[in-house]
View 1 (tube, rainbow, N blue to C red):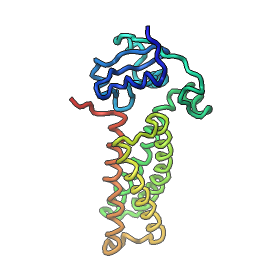
View 2: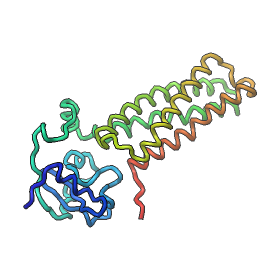
View 3: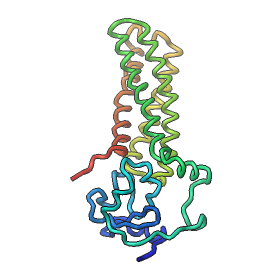
View 4: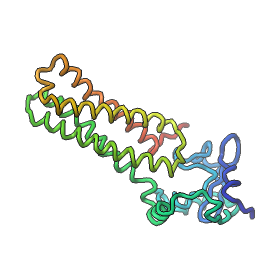
Length: 238
């Protein structure tokens, strides 16, 4: 049975007509015929031509699913010098806790999504009802949105680096600039509101501009969230 090293395995990435091979615990499998591995990618996240031993530990299915595919070889055990390695501490953490490979970013993004959507919601409630506590709640939500956007950005960059090797995928190319725009918009609105507590009273002139700034957080959050979800729960095209 043929023995592969990581460089040779990488040639079988399922692209441009090449076979799609994946490795798991030293065994190399041919997944070329699977629709789930069309164009050499699975769920727009896992790439053929790579060792998925750690990834499968964090997957919703177990390694037994690989029994559907034929084994075409074995993967040569590589030394630290020949393997592509992460920093030692990070590698140990991901090896012992596969949860941290996939979940930290999807977990943390829920906070800025909720806070950034709640900000325009409570401001609109204030304008409808005149209840000042709604407007104050909106301010607190905006502060939370700014804080957790920074957290989500840090986990996003980290997981993008060690899961996708920093490859500029389309969802990432959309999310990064829009997230920066959303963060700047939130900061500007927060500073504006702190310096002018009555900016919405009455709703005219600069108050309208401020409200439009706040309302823009909703579509920005929706678009960023949609592209993020397309990576976590991709829509398979027929």
